[in-house]
Length: 407
Ligand SMILES: Cc1ncc(COP(=O)(O)O)c(C=O)c1O
Image (tube, rainbow, N blue to C red; front, side, top):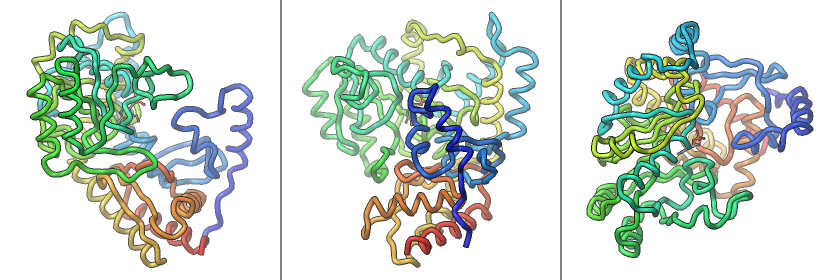
């Protein structure tokens, strides 16, 4: 049995960080930094990273989604390096801007144009502005617990630094509840600009939920009848379910499609794609950022999309994820535990139910992490093309050891 890994160098750096950085390590990396696992890496390769203490981990978080082909992917990183050598941030745009937009429009069902930014929240924020510009309406319909970024209107009501007015025009409805959407539309006739939702529900701290049969068809019908623009937030799930956009897997046609995370395999880029009907509104909406025209991340994204297509990536990572989920559930069952795996296989959400509840689950995850499988207790995991059968077998072995350690 492996001994739990020690992380003294990570801890020492974390202390230094806290002196000069609020929270030390902040944002979505913050909660994990407070756990028993590693906080700082020294190198990464394929599906693995090594921390500053020299411990190597199988990474099932994939940087919370961006890493889909493997860290330091040679074709992607060489494409970025080639573009960097020609120029990255220059006073005029690079041709790769057009190449990338053409590629995305070719690949994604229902996309007639694309605009690029850096983070997922650039895309979701822009999508709402475009919907408002096109409809002349102000309200935003969204799913309770749905995450679209860190701009004030996207945050959980009551979060520090936000005010009630930030969400004054946001209406929340439960997931899989088309009747609630119809009711909200009826309550605010002619005032709802858009419905924004991920294609399936992937909240943190709760089982993930796929759309019920017929849900998206009902949503589409209700929104179309009322002139409400449909925004699919594919920032997290994009290219992990279907390369043509996750909406194709669930049989609906959005007006606007938000991508980020996996688009650049770790290079900073996000995109909003949309239908011809909204092209004018998109062009009229003020949207820019100093770094939005960085050409190297665009070259990286183009290479990523090419690699994803060549490898039929969504199918491949779905199969890898299915093997992982089944393997872990079998290990849990062998120890008398019920491990529930929800969401889509390429982004599995794990939860041990029953005895010990969430505390036992968190302890098991912590034991796994300290033995070399980098996973978090409260967030969906991510599967990449770089994960091998050996990674799955080793992870199951680690999971087995973690249960034994807790027995
Ligand atoms: C579904 C979804 N939308 C939007 C975002 C925001 O993306 P970013 O953090 O790149 O701004 C995220 C980030 O986790 C996300 O998961």
